[in-house]
Image (cartoon, rainbow, N blue to C red):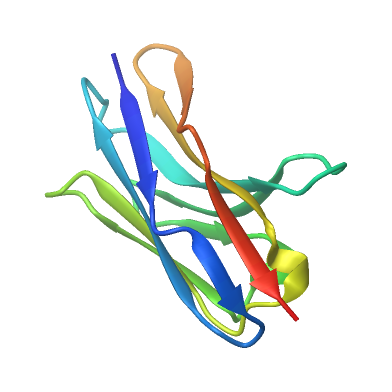
Length: 118
């Protein structure tokens, strides 16, 4: 059973920074993509950033140039460095893991709240 545990959310003023962490545990294929999605009230869940085991990364348009995703495979952890935060970044941030074991499997963390005040 794969588990994802997020940490690092909180309240920050506009222009500030936060760092989110997601620790993965369990049986995980080496072929995987791990990253972050977010969901604001009344809005659909959207991709924030993701990184694959081959080193490819993807970012949502609204966070490019401000957020950086990184992974430490030795610690089975992915990080999201968020800089120049804006009130519109306020959302619940969810860690997401997809791994391939003949078929693709998807796992979600419980979510962590990020609130940016103006």
